[in-house]
Length: 160
Image 1: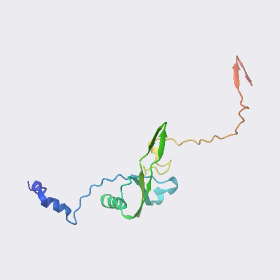
Image 2 (image 1 turned 180 degrees about the vertical axis):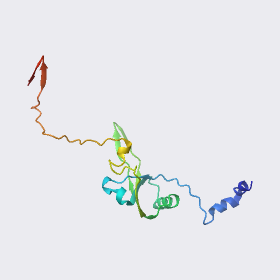
Image 3 (image 1 turned 60 degrees about the vertical axis):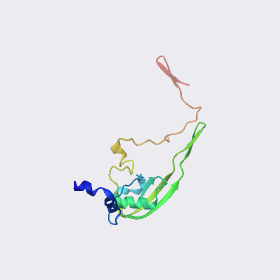
Image 4 (image 1 turned 120 degrees about the vertical axis):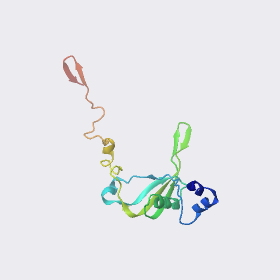
């Protein structure tokens, strides 16, 4: 009964405001961007991590969220706003939503987990993705009139 009584009234709400006690409810959607294949992040680690978020999120919001909620040491935060790509389908014009890229410099190196797809060999093999073949065909390129047509006429084969 005492736990319920302590959670009611003005004294409870003022206890939440007092310094030293803070309740954090982060409502920030941070999407981690995987590093490129040249980064070699599994062996060397990363000290700058990239996130994508909404344009309304500030540097202070990102820093507070990473430090307080996830316990990650943040050195500095850089942000870049991007306009959504403009598209057209028939006579209908639309654009993708605007977004903000956030570059976070960490105090300590971060090593991505093994399942994090840094290279095609690293994460895609576990997911069952096939490595795409090169779109450039190898071999000599023939002239378009010099194609050889093979026809079967009964048992004998001849070329035109």
